[in-house]
Amino acid sequence: MISDSVVTQIVKNVNGEVTEDKVRQVFAAYEAIMEGATVGTVMQDPKTGSVAVRCSENGVPRWKVSAVTGDDWVDMQPRLEGWTVLHDPEAASE
Image (cartoon, rainbow, N blue to C red; front, side, top):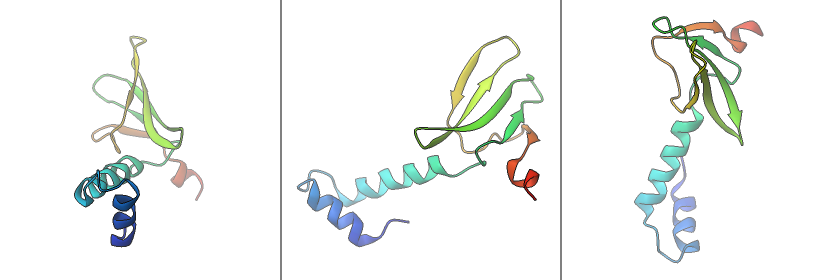
């Protein structure tokens, strides 16, 4: 959670062009991106067989998903609900 003093300083630094509410919304969005499964987690969609690996690109966690058809894409959800965990790096390190 961002402190009130940081929000106030950001607003001052941009000469009041951005409201405190907007600053808080941006930080909330950033925190939502950063939460989620651990980088290195591997998941599989039981319905389609697609496989996803949680990785980090430029410090931002994301899922790199590959379908059995050869298609691939990036998914920014923190977690892939309903998918099967194939590898959990936190569990593997215990």
